[in-house]
Structures are given as structure tokens and as C-alpha cells.
Length: 193
Ligand SMILES: [Fe+2]
Image 1 (cartoon, rainbow, N blue to C red):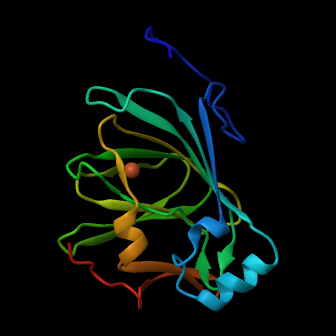
Image 2: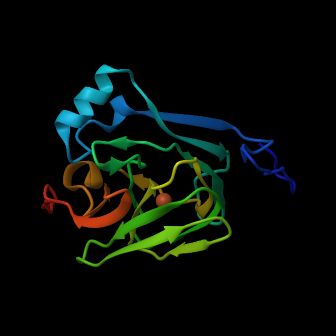
């Protein structure tokens, strides 16, 4: 790992960083239980384990003072009426924020806090999204092309995927009449710690 200043290129159309240390690929099989329509999920999985999203990370120490950063690419598609999306997470250190910069595609960030607030912000090229501390976040691709974002967050934030795996997000983004729509998640259930 470099401990002197470094640069890398981030250019379209693909926006794969010219330098990266990790390439994470999440497929449909890793999202079992996360989509609201289990029958549609099983039917799609029977056709093959589709690649839903990819993350390219630059490796930095996971400690305060560092800024972890990389690129997220959510591919287009749907499970039933629900768009392809990331797992979504809270940060383990809840009081840590994140910045996203949309490079390509059309989509939305679905967010919520443990206190019952929720928000959905549209993502399109050139738009910056600030996710404040305490807000869980999930990228959703509502378009026909890859949704590509650059992200950066504090090195000590950590990822809590388990809470979202168990309770989901309060809101889903589904396609209705050919357009994205925000709806209540009928399966949302607050877990008790
Ligand atoms: Fe995050």
C-alpha cells in the first residue's frame, strides 16, 4: 500500500479505476431474502446466478483518519417489479457519513435511520449525494444502463449488513407502469436488539 500521495484515472464510459485493489462481485444468490417477491427471485435464479453489482475498492487502512473510496456499479434489471440494488447497510460506527458522486446511469439511494426517518434521493450523472451519519443506504438502478457512483467514507466506519438483511428498508423502489415508484415495504420489520 502506498503511503505517499497517489492518483488514478476514472474515466467513462466504464469508470473502472485504473488502480484498484479489490473487485467485489455480488450475484443474485447472495441476495436471498432481500427482494420482496420470493417467487420472482427463485424464477430468475433458476435461469442463472445474475451479476447484480460490482465494487472496485482502493485499499486503505480501516481506521479513523483514512478515507475509504471506490466505485460501485449496479447493473440494470429487476426481480419481479423491484429493481436491481445493493445489499445496503448501516455503518458499524453509526455516527459516520458517506459521499456519493454519480458518474453514469439513473437510479436512487434509499435511506433510513434507526429512529424511523426515511429518504430517497435520485441519482443521475453529475449529482452529489451526502449521506449523513446514522443513515443506512442502498443504491437502486432504475434505468436501462449501469448505475455508476464514486463513494468515499471514513476509514473506521465499518459495515453492518446484518440489520438490513433482517429487517429490510422501509421503502422499496419498484417499476409500475414503466416508471419507478416508491412504495412501503410490506415485509419491513424492526428487529429488537
Ligand atoms: Fe456506506
